[in-house]
Length: 283
Image (cartoon, rainbow, N blue to C red; front, top):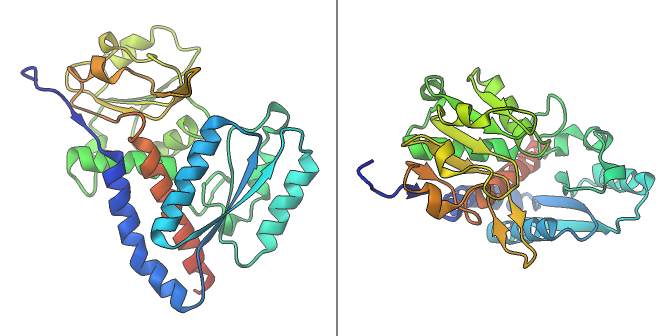
């Protein structure tokens, strides 16, 4: 790469562009007395959850949508959560419902995903959901930007792609979208041995672990594209990604920063799904 520093993907700018495209669609909805409204069910006071909810409120405000947050303590019972979902399902003024992760261990069940009305499942967590998960849409938006291709699928079929992590909110839905598009990839996780042997061959690494320095300079090849999805907060509340940006930028051709990388794009696509859900009401 002739010692040229890699290009940092500006997730905030990409998110602004996505949100801008939603404004005309919302104007049409408002003429029909419809305001796209997202209901968020939150349990506890996880710092990361609080941050993401603030991002959702901010994005919604920019485009003229609304956000309702139903906040439960960690001691909430399963039945109370289920009843809240049922009420939002029945509310015609609510167009999208998300259950903010993480949840306490005793509430970590797929039952909540299936309880959400499929027409309001804008996180795309239900099996055979009509909505693509925003995190997966964000990954493909970044790859289209990096390779400067509107239809990037064919191009990706010639690339070596490695996904690190298989969690329900990132690694799993991202892998499912690659599978749906018939794009080959390798998925590594905590039980994978000699992971560096796979990452050193990868043209694209999508890291969804949420642990500092899970990807280090020696694990990537010259010119690789690095997309960091996983985040971790230190004791001072500072956000960290899965790799040290200063360390990897000498080898990576493109990389996403933390914060300001995948997060804003993820939220923008959540808003896009919300607007689509609201439009479906009048069709």
